[in-house]
Amino acid sequence: MYKTINDFTTDWKNESESTLKILKALTDTSLPQKVTAEGRTLGFLAWHIALTLGEMGGKAGLTINAPAENTPEPTSAAVIATAYEKAAKSIGDEVQKKWSDAMLKEEIEMYGEKWTRSGTLAALIKHEIHHRAQMTVLMRQAGLKVPGVYGPSKEEWAQYGIPPMK
Image (cartoon, rainbow, N blue to C red):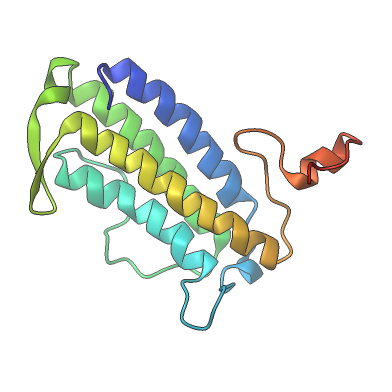
C-alpha cells in the first residue's frame, strides 16, 4: 500500500517503463501466440493491460487517456504500445493532479467492494506485473527476445558474454 503519491509515482514510472519495454518487443505476428488452444493470446494480454488503465482509473474517479474498455483488440503491436504509453502517462499525471497523500486512505467503490485509493493503486501495479509475466512466456514461445525487467533476461546475459543462470 502506498502512503504517499510520490511513492506510487516512483513505482509507477518504473513499472510502466518495464511494461512498455515488453510491449515494444512484440511484433504483429506474435500477437496470436497462445499456450493452449483455450488460452489467451499475447495480443489479448497486451491489450488487456492497456485497457485496464482506463477502466480501473475511471472507476477510481480519474480521467485516463485510454481507449474505452470495450475497444476491440488491435492487430498492430505498435498501436497497443502507443495506447498503453499514453494511458500510463495519464495515470501518473491524474493521480498527481487529483489525489493527495491524505486521500490515499479514503475508500472508494471498486468492483462492488470498498478499496482504499492506496490499495487500488497497488492492485493496478500488481495486475500489470502479473500479466506482464504471463506475456514473457508467450513471447519466448513466439520466438521473441524478452527484455530484462528486474535484471537481465536470458537473452541479455548472452549479450554480456555471460552464460545464463541455470
